[in-house]
Length: 114
Image (cartoon, rainbow, N blue to C red; front, side):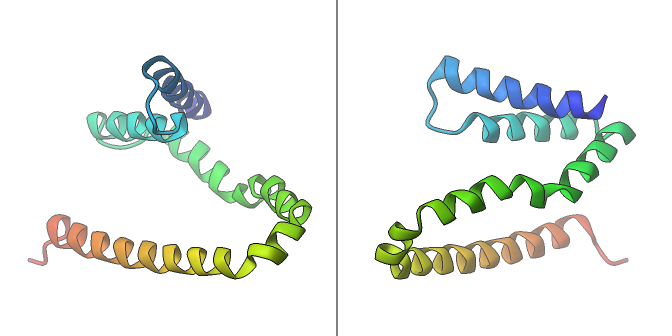
């Protein structure tokens, strides 16, 4: 049942993206819908947790097609590799800093020491 909830929110996000012509990808809109659903229900059901764990444990399999695409565009990497590496490094550092900042704020907000 949990996988159907995840797919349902994905489809709802894609529908919203198509219907409203938003510049945000449908999958991201679906994640926002799922987040709001989880807030309203105060967490995930057992089946939703189990489905999420299954998807996360098989996440590397979902990255194989993009890895194959990189191999097919090797000439582009030879030409623009340094620029791509610089952009990727910058965004990774920025993401790590932002994630650490958000986690520290959330920990202070939700986990008060007695």
